[in-house]
Length: 184
Image (cartoon, rainbow, N blue to C red):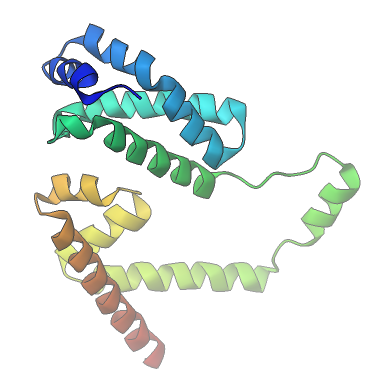
């Protein structure tokens, strides 16, 4: 691992807009980011693609890094978060065997199940609409827009701890709204 004294000047230079310094950081940390991505994704092509995404994200957000000496850990957190997002949003693998495709097609939900799912989604959105704007914005940013706590902290100009508390409170208020809907 690169010593702090070796990468810190490059981070500071990159934060001031030096692309050469950022390129040197990419070269130094690329294998580490790839290893973390591969450990999570278990796929070489996806890990390579995620590695590129991590450095694009890092370049865009580098000015937000408040403690440049923590660059390796910051880069690791970006990698883990993006890998988790990719896993969660990854479409299920579907076999190419025609017999299995027919079986999968036969297992789709009934029209009643589809209607119930749609109705539940409408209830959630209805509950969200009845919340105060800050509660609604907090829940939408986290659950629907996929923003991290740090991104939300920047967006709402509040400490991460405050964002966590808002999420907790907003979830409770949404649960109460949904419980009220079911009683009606």
